[in-house]
Amino acid sequence: MAPKSIAAQKGFFSTAIDEARNPENATIVRSIAIFTVGVAFLHSSLGEILLPPM
Image (cartoon, rainbow, N blue to C red):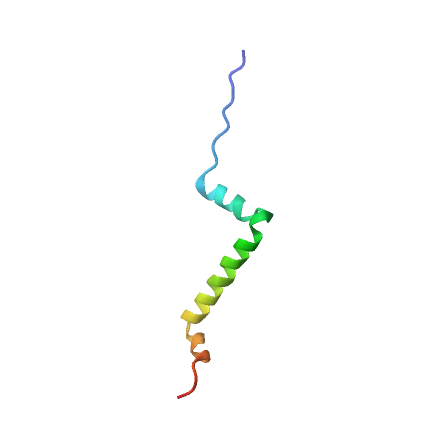
């Protein structure tokens, strides 16, 4: 009888990337990306553009 081959389990990061690329999760991934860009903009010096002049 031939030995059974055992499939290696996927790692954490490859599972996370597969789930992020899943079309079912596209809106969640897009929302997180937009939120991240917004926080990065407000944290940068460009965020001072939004302050009223004094």
